[in-house]
Image 1 (cartoon, rainbow, N blue to C red):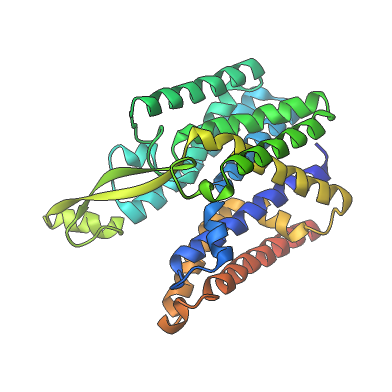
Image 2 (image 1 turned 120 degrees about the vertical axis):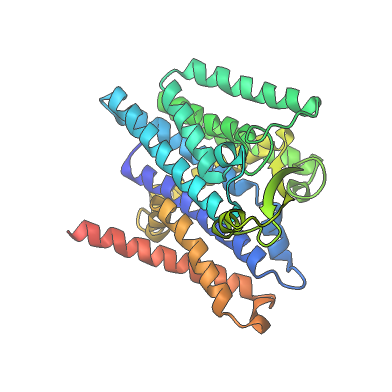
Length: 349
């Protein structure tokens, strides 16, 4: 892919960051009655992580095609995977404390990305193996679902490996396919649009979030203290002091297998759209591309900024119907400006 195409991939990742910020702001500054637009954002929320995983697979395959030293590239990706996992585990500990086995297998989106990147680095460039693993992961998830089997980190909990691994593998296979013949891009876009139209006509986009078709609820039992349940450091202190513990049920939403086709289709079409815009107007989405390029830094920083705003914002403003939207524009805008200035400074030096 050329540089403009890279801008498009960064831009769609930046777009996903903005969507993520909006839903996080909605939860933190939830108004008494949700506006229609806010309800729509909640209903399409599963698309946001789908974009992350599809683009991660796409980018990993593209990176592999560009390297001239595959063993060194593979080691770099495994180091990258280890860093992501360490960050995810640290964030999980700060919020939920030490939990077993969740601290290893189910720590959040970064932890799941770490596992998928490690797997992708292992199987590339073997396309047939990627296809086989994609089919196998879908079959395993379907089998587990049919028998009511729930395994933490695999098909249950926060950002379980299934179904996110199939989405990641779809990104790898999409890049491999387009590398062979660019005309497949139009075919893939048309098929994605048809999938969305068919499923939306048959089921309706409201069910991306509501109802049993698109999202299933799962729980994990954490061990917390009677004093604290959302502060890992405080819980460790409580345990040292002998404070009694209690069970705590954490609830999560996991996309069903039925939702996978529409998630992949919508994420793929987002990628195609932003790539076409940057192909034609390379400098129109520079700030959004910068946000996506430095997505990990923004991901970590936006939690801190949202927390600061929540502390300093008067309670009378926190529940206003427009507060979450202003906060979203403020946090995402600051992120885009900061990342754009950082890139500009680097280019000058």
